[in-house]
Length: 183
Image 1 (cartoon, rainbow, N blue to C red):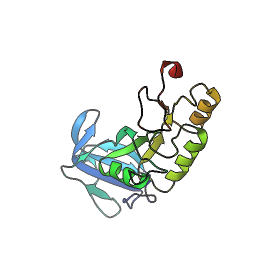
Image 2: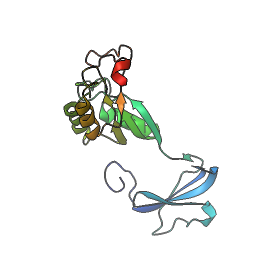
Image 3: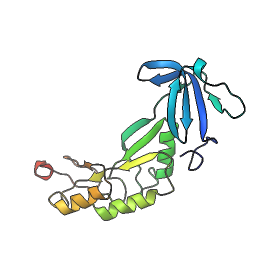
């Protein structure tokens, strides 16, 4: 979020210049116009305004400007196992690596996110601790597999999908499923 949140960018409208901007046409020398937190245009640097009073330009030289990366399999482990990896450390590390969106797995937090209550607890635990966009998987385990109401509640609470293991997960409260559970 620009001008708030964790952004280091002080302006509502600015330009990013680079000799290497990744676009659908390939890598080009370009200027990316940002306004109110959104990309407005991508133009050839020669067509972009120069840095003057009122025009804010950040020139990245030969550094690559590209869309943020997405990782759909991360383990943030919070609440309950923050000593392994928590929201703050995990999302800061993701950001440092160029990831702007991550999706957290349901099994290494305590409790595991296999029901609505645990899912809401996890979402609440993330508030004020995340530095990238975060989504959450819910867990499909033998205890909820045949309960369509419980699965529906988990998905309505915001789970993006369901993760299950057809082999031992290594986590006692995230049981192994079989083909009857996932039909």
